Length: 265
Image 1: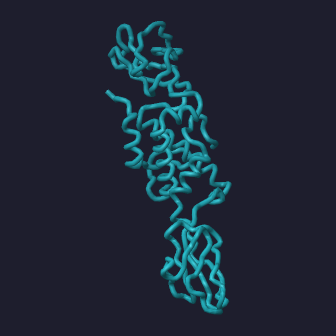
Image 2 (image 1 turned 135 degrees about the vertical axis):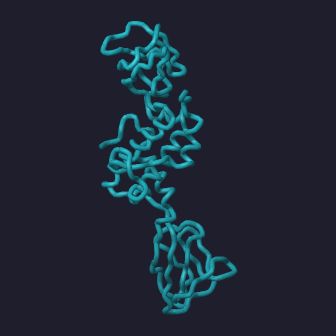
Image 3 (image 1 turned 90 degrees about the vertical axis):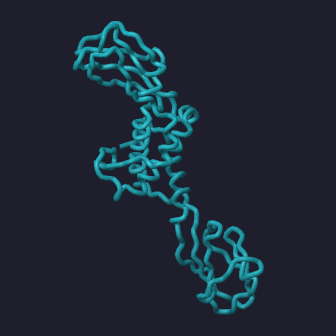
């Protein structure tokens, strides 16, 4: 499966978000830094560490960072306050930031599936369509006059067809600002009603992201949650690329999406 035309975020954005979330897990558990010469005070790590994560050892003894202690660090460069004795090994462990190479090429398909799934979860939770698209949906008549469309915002004057029991309906009234259409009498009980229309905020991903930034943040949170928990918290709902799973949107994502939720009444 490739990235859907209606996906709210890009593969690059998803990877960038996951790199931020995964920083602490990118641990360098043991790195050989060098060996004391009896005169050298300057040494360098292979990577720039995340601030506060360095554990530096001389001959197995943990050193304390600070100009009044054992060493200072700037970027990847270490300067000892006291010269390490000759022949003493210098080692370090630390966290480093992830880079684009954190992901292998085979991760792209999984991430694209997660982006598609996360976008759908956010849309289903809010009752929204984010990127404008054609929608054809089926309802069952309930002998009432009002019919609530499944997705908002409905594009103005975009209803292209309405059929009742297989027959085209020639006239109806509509209040698309709240996603409702009205039969001139009632929608016949138990009849199949098919409505074709357009819904969404904008036609491009970039324009849509600018209009619903909280939804973008929520989708990224859902992607991260699915990526981290795809094997042990997913049980019984159909999500593309993952199969049949049970999944609940993370509370932080819900908080971002709640203001967008459509009134279900």
